Amino acid sequence: MTALLTLEAVKKYFPLRPGLLRRANRYIRAVDGVSLTVAQGEAFGLVGESGSGKTTLARLIPRLTPATDGKVVYAGQDLARASGREVTRLRRQMGIVFQDPASSLNPRATLRKSILRPLELDGIRGSEARERLDATVALVNLGAEVLDRYPHQLSGGQQQRASIARAIVLRPQLLILDEPTSALDVSVQAQILNLLQDLQGEIGLTYLIITHNLAVVRYMSDRIGVMYLGKLVELAPAAQLHARPLHPYTAALLSASPPANPRLRDRKRYPLAGDPPSLIAPPPGCRLHPRCPAAVDRCSREEPQLVLSGPGRQVACHRWEELTLTAVSREDRPLRVHER
Amino acid sequence: MGQVRIPDAAERALSYPHELSGGMRQRVMTGMMISRSPDLLIADEPTTALDVTIQAQVLELLLDLRRRNQMSLLIITHNLGVVAEIADRVAVMYAGSIVEQADVFDLYERPLHPYTRLLMRALPRLAKGEGRLETIPGNVPNLVDTITGCVFHPRCPQRLPVCAVTVPRARPAGPARQVACHLLEADPT
Ligand SMILES: Nc1ncnc2c1ncn2[C@@H]1O[C@H](COP(=O)(O)OP(=O)(O)OP(=O)(O)O)[C@@H](O)[C@H]1O
Ligand SMILES: [Mg+2]
Image (cartoon, rainbow over all chains, first blue to last red):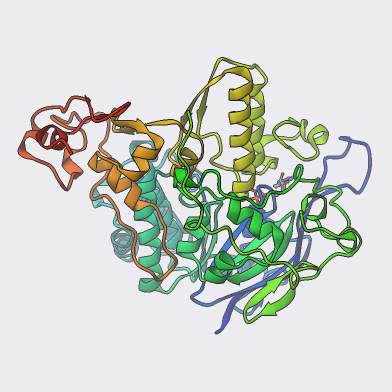
């Protein structure tokens, strides 16, 4: 297993606008010391609380945003130290697909133009560019007839296929997918997920996939990382995470995930108390402790580190060995007759 | 903004939308809607950008408002998980037409329209490597194309000759249930 991407204690702090509170040195700690490794050819899923820093983390990788601290190493190269030209070269080995296809497609350009653009920037023109375009369009199952249309003339699924085509036209090694299907309906989502899985086999892609949909992340990922408030709190092979979460936040997430079965609407949850806290002044100790049903004294004083909890598994919780957080099973809930 | 759980709400009230995470933007919108205590709340994809714990809180909030204010809720979503969690009745739309209407339990347990059945089967319920997802052949028609007959017939694996000719009318298929499909007219199951 070769690492394609390694993050070492990566941080991203956004300064609060000066004058807002007239207090200096206040930051939004969007990503606060995340370390992880993604292997070549792996599909790594990233889930977590809204605002926990997933998109920010994704943007740090191609240095769309520079990290405040820590290291991003891609294919053996430290991105913070790479020269401008090196960064450009490394960036071409990464593709990004966002939730909203509109953000990766120019609304005033035909699909052909949008997909050709990265090739152009890479100095590839003429017949070679056309061949690559045709091959890529075929890979994403986009009909050649839509190439001369504008994004608004396409369905959401076609738009997302086009933005995937654009992201892979330079044959990157890494594809970052930030909520790639959350704007799509279920049947189009299934087509796109199948496509992404086929592509992984056909052109050997490595995926970093961010989503709130736990069924999607389970279907797509080999390993899953769970983020809470700028920190990675758990990391595990996908099946194990779903079967036996070790972190209370993971358990809460899994039990809140709606199972698409109305008979399970009264299933037992693992609820978190209160509101998501501030990223400006995060709680001391474990960041989850004010909301955690399993919190003890120590949790409010001492910050748990990410520790090895088994082969390929890491968790940041003082109590992981004592807690049994068997995932709320979908099948063993009693059926209940709906009352009107 | 407190009700919809925005951390640092006071500071954030001055933020620009692009500085908020996707989820925060969604919650600000929800906050704006419920601040007017309406009789009917139409929520179009109320939880799309939210993580599932906050999604659960928003759904809880909507149900609570409904109970307290006798408010009706019309939720528009493509998230079948959300529907299963909150709806009493469901209408399934395809290309501008309602093809099936049913009690939520009937819909999930005994979908009758071929489109509904295929939708239920396209949901990812597998882990990686356990197989491919089922998809519906073809694409959603462009709404400017006029389709004769049933809107779903070009993609329907069970279509009959009549489906390309006549628009199926919605007919009752059990209590509080309506389905617009020629198959059911031919063979009421
Ligand atoms: N350019 C920016 N300036 C200031 N703050 C920012 C900026 N971009 C993001 N943030 C803040 O950083 C935090 C993390 O945001 P991010 O978009 O990474 O979260 P996320 O995990 O992707 O959330 P979601 O699941 O809702 O998409 C949020 O508090 C957000 O408001
Ligand atoms: Mg995001």
